[in-house]
Image 1 (cartoon, rainbow, N blue to C red):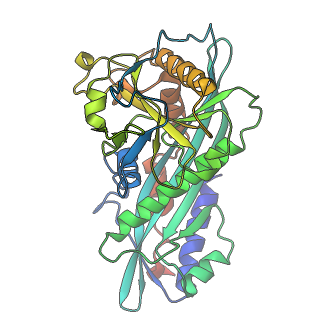
Image 2: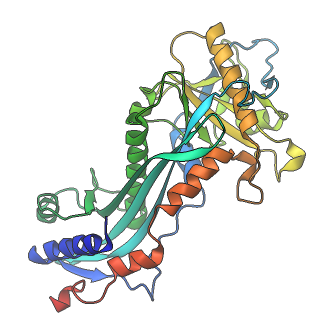
Length: 374
């Protein structure tokens, strides 16, 4: 997509608003920086929400119900030269800008523009990573759930920027810009899911690692996929199956030593009964700032009863992940829970985004963008 096409698309959206008696008040890139600050830890916030109503996680993997042991050694790392388990690595990124406000009658509503992108890297036999898929979208996010403006924006060709709307009326007690920013992150997850589902050339048995959780139905239908979360909720309570033992997650993680994992767990209730997960320690506690660091959460689809095949798979995946912790990306943030190929995917996807300076030129160009000049 060219800058001229993007500028024309932005102008077309504003002209459509004007044609339907809506005043557009552009944000000022000098009074208020257009780049929205993302939540400090969006992955943890999302995971907190998932465990908000019911945080009981039952052991799926058998554990002694009289003397439960919740730290399980995974064994020696599996190197790529021995067993090349993980071949594909996916990460997504977004930047969200406050574009301005739409004034209708006596009310006004914020509008955000979000740029979302996804990159998938493939690793060859020599260990070299190269991009095999990149997806990119620009979205104008409006708070309208119905009405004339939504109909006008949906039914008119608007070029390279796609209008997006809320499906239900937002909670009036919440900040509307925050709600729209959450919609942008939701669309990013949809873009990630589509990229993973339509990844051409992935052979049977080649594993894909997705940065973050895989709690979407489209992910759960894919074979040989794991979610690897650098950050996660601390709310889960682990219940040992067929017993009265309950342990809060921080207590269990505090006892994990390097190259140890928790038993495989399942959320006792929820929308994803086939989703299993476990926590794996990469680094010893004395190498990080606190005992909750140096640990990753691994998610995978596991259906049916626990058996030896599932036990072997968890061991293989865990040992392969331990090998992936090197090379270390210190002093980058969260170096202790990163793996290098995901870091490379993250770096690549961010390079596909337009710079904030370019987006300012597209969204806040003088002439034609201020309705008073039309």
